[in-house]
Length: 499
Image (cartoon, rainbow, N blue to C red; front, side, top):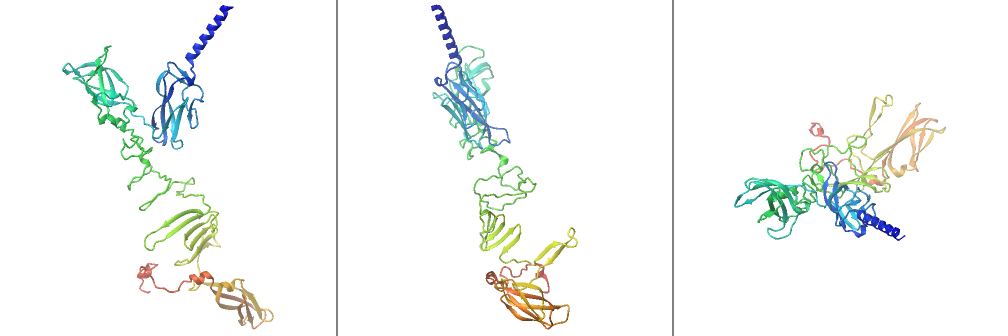
């Protein structure tokens, strides 16, 4: 019985040790997420970037962290393909995540309380390597053979701190003491403007001897920094450029997304303005963005119940400000109408027609309708009756009774609208005499004929005397202004010999 109990104890202990080696409690470990760098997506995918992530497991064994409770991204979605197994040591570039910085300005990777955040200001991925040329001494003369070389960056010519890990390159050919090698010290080593110094170590190729350090470190000149200039991310590297993410973009946009000061066509250029802007010259547009109906349109849009306004303001002497308004439900002129507005003058275009609250001046006042005898193929062009007065015309027919009298009733607003009445009477169908027996009073007048039962065609005109007419009555004759003199509204009129 004691042997069985001992055996069970040994088996349980073995299972516990095996489980501990394979899976370690996340809260008991030391590991952190890593954001290696961010690079823009291929051309044409604006606002899309790729972040290269990894992790650093400082423990001596593998860690398994399944699920998303301690291994997640924020904001949603929390699962973006991150690993659940974390091997010992530093694992850079373990996976790649797509970012859309147009909608999510930050993205945070969380590992058990530790986190790293990516934004548009995160370091950009560099091109990988720089070309470095150096010289090796050999017993007072230049060396010519193959060597194993190692390199490291420092922040000072002597002493100082290492700014990179060791980079080892075996079996490098050295001719007359000169060698050329590609070096990659990592992103963090070259993303600051501080000066760097390269320390070189060497030994014979294939030897197990310790490396011999070249006494004098070489200053890293501006040429190697050009590798990072292709991915400058702030004004320290791209002078006067705000967020110049890489050599191909400014503020995340390609060059063809910007307007140039040129008369040349810019077919790929778009304008998207989120605030107020001022144009100091003339804005000319040949075409605008095509609508779904295939028409070229420019759109101004708002949700104001008063309407959407376009203000045209001329600040020169004698200039004025006009408003073009697409009326909303709260506008006194009615929703759905188009208004041209300046002070008390309005022109209202509605589905039912055109209204002008003011005077309308034209060479002729014409109208056009379909020809009643051939509406599909012809039109009728009519000209309105013209008068020097604001004149209204009323007409009709009346038949006198057996006493030779007829009462004509006008609209109930007739006298409120008109004054200075004039009359015309025409007898129809027989010879007879007709007179206006009583002039208009109380919106009626009386016709009398010398015979009974006579048909009379009548016409009455009146001159408007409502408030608008009295305030806005235009003079029949007036002199042209100084700037208008010598010029004709209709230019050929000025060249005519008969004026």
